Image: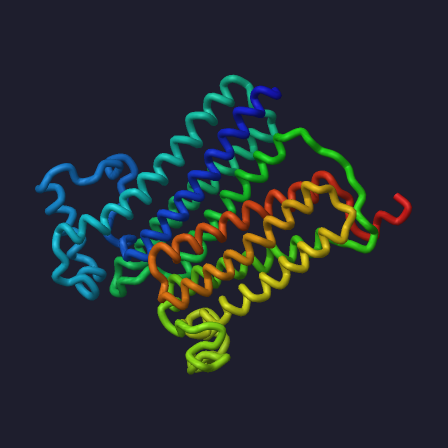
Length: 350
């Protein structure tokens, strides 16, 4: 079983790495306006791109029937179409590759008896989540093929959150297969568990509003920092009715919320790092907390520069990728905390 665990760990980490790459390519697809360049979904036949001039002409003609071309890209040339088609094709191809990478090793491990019952059930959960994610991707694209050539930012947020959920499951399951557990007691007055979970909850909100910011193109306005065009609140911050809808659909307000959540997250992670240092934690946990602290500073600065430079593709993609790197680092931190430590006031005399 130890040998089996080693291969299963590699399988899970490869899945997490591919999903991370999928998020990066997805960011490029979003920022280059490529996501609506393929207007159909064919799981098997769609695995190959157009292979000759006739097929390219047919694909381009199909694209011209939809709102993105008619309202935004009228007059686009075939070479320009090929550029945006490329990123969406790579994005979908990578999704197919992820499916194969999950399926074939899964069958091999099952046949060879490498799976425990618990791990087999976990693998089935991963397949279910992967299927939901694939369906959500197509549902998201479809929202931009009717009337308005923009993907629903709600569906975009759900699609991104599902990617983070998949990476979370892959990483957590892989970490569970290591056998280096040690029980260690923290100071009674330090409850790192609550701090870590609060960080996770705030980070989830930040990812959602980050997706809203991307989906509404809110990063292209108010390109100053820390103030927003000379004001602490954006103009027309509550212009929509009912008032609460501004938090979800008003681009200026959405960017403002994204900034506030990012600042709160920076402060919270700083607190988590300091409290970890003040606890009698092992060096490995203190190191993980320090990595989280450094990553959140880098991520915050990336967000600032992304806004200041009006969301260039490279900065926007790096900003999104760093968010997932931060999250994986949090998973490492929290897994060690849950596995190797007992925390909280319940330790009284235990």
